Image (cartoon, rainbow, N blue to C red; front, side, top):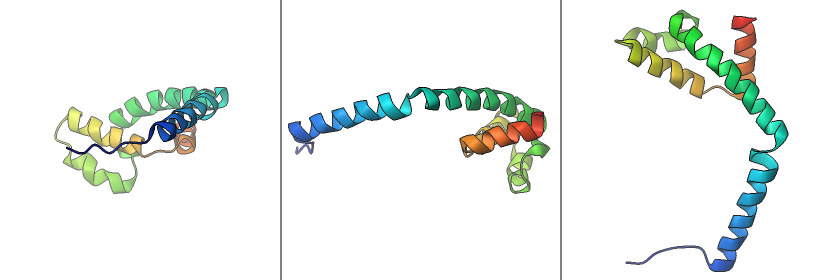
Length: 98
């Protein structure tokens, strides 16, 4: 069996890039602050959409109507929320929750 992998120098470079990205971008304080805010907003949106699925956009109502139980409805709501950008999640929370 042939195994395809990076050369050792290239692998070391890749590790350095990953380390840089996690330290300076993915886990940067400003990014973590936005992440915390969005997580808080999503924690509010999920139960709201679950309790009032009519708040979902019209194009999602077919999926809402096809949901046969709460688990299926939760999946529809989760799928909708998963497609949100951070900015949109914050805007939706503001619009719906004030």
